[in-house]
Length: 221
Figure (cartoon, helix red, strand yellow):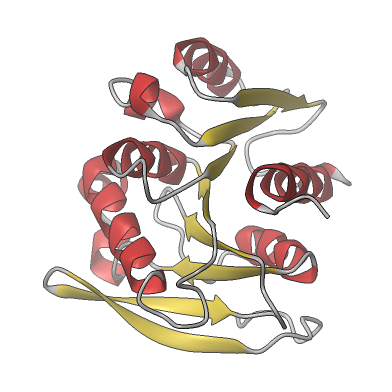
């Protein structure tokens, strides 16, 4: 599945060096972008995720560039040892951020992370490791509990979005919220499950994420 043709902004397929690997990514650059968001997918997902592509397009329309990278290759994505290796995912997310910092089009832009599932833990660990690199984080149905030791070190403004019917994930996010010391928010989307397939649920996620990034990344008009 390719990014939707309804997105009016050009999307480029790029390779990002990450140690001995090269990560495949979709890089979308709106006209005169004011911020850039790197996505950290979870549970073996990647740049083809229709949920994250939808969120990315909402952010593009608000003037933010987006980078959707496969943090794992195909073989790794089928191996639970890699899927839950949040330290590895964080290292590769930092590689994506470093790549964005080398591009003339995104070098001067404030950076945010959008993480889902285990990718949320990776985003939080990456933010704690390089607090100078990222200013805002949004977690969708995330596992911030997997970043437990890193949580007090996160400086970036962090929003946790959780489905109200997402079982223990709600509890894990509530506990993580208490441990965070940065500017923070916790929003529970009523009647939504883990992947937010319910009518209007993903739209709510995208709008809350967009509002959070606008508030914390973009200068006031």
